[in-house]
Image 1 (cartoon, rainbow, N blue to C red):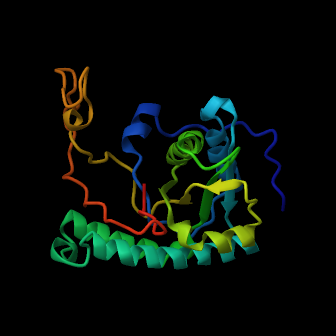
Image 2 (cartoon, helix red, strand yellow):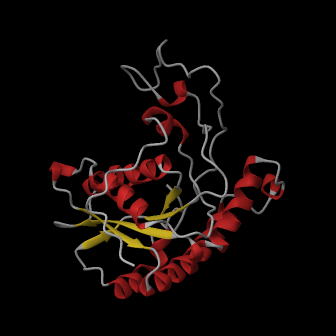
Length: 252
């Protein structure tokens, strides 16, 4: 049965804006349940409200949920992700040292990523943020699509869903373009998997504020650059591996 959403208002936000901003995790594990069309409509609407280069709104979002082409596209992206993760896992040391210990941050990430990649073709939805190009790909194109992508993830958080933005599509891009009939003047910027979390959102651990925020001069901090009480921190992220130009760097 078709659902007419034209007269439906936006659903009630379950999360305050600031709470959502500081507690939206990268969600990689999902329940198998499909995402209701009204949820997809809402998160996509939020994405389209984002700012873009010269307000041209050159971004486009290709939603792959439950259609026949979506199923094939998910398989293509999952196969590409297997190859990329195999490289990244080795290059960043997930196969050695603390990566074998599931009680360590690296071990937990290794276990989560293995489950994520194994089930990627079953993600309830995969969304491809794209940019309609006016010339060659440039840094301005990211400025046009990435704010919209973050809007989408924050809206998903507000409705009890979650996702993560990756570049898993890159090793299958030619096949995806042919399958999904993506024009040559459209740049596929990322891959977002989306679903209802098996885990949960919550306070995220990041590096201390003084390491990331400077005032007046590079490397100079200020007395107001202080984390709120109760903030927890993470260690430095794994060193990014040196990759061939054709190999993507994994998740953003």
